[in-house]
Length: 114
Image (cartoon, rainbow, N blue to C red):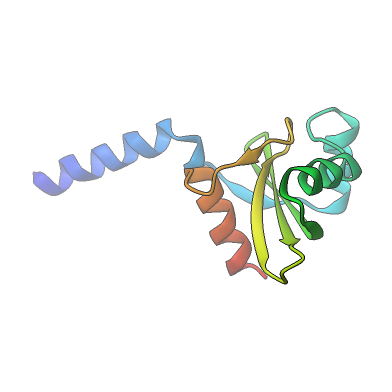
């Protein structure tokens, strides 16, 4: 009985959380389509915003979709040589705190699929 209740709670929690929805990496074609339909910020604008906010230089970018929400994972290099992976909301261009479920999930997926 205890196992059934635990399983039921896990299923109901996962259905209510968008972070548990399907996560996939976008192809260049998918990303161009998202930008052209105003579902994502253009990469040149994204780079400029992140470089201004962080003081670093963007050296790589990957885009991921969770349902219809796009999250960018940017690798930023600072003058000190330090590297940092930063998650960005694809629609607003805002930095997503690393402590959020979405950032953690995208980061883990990106590292596992390199």
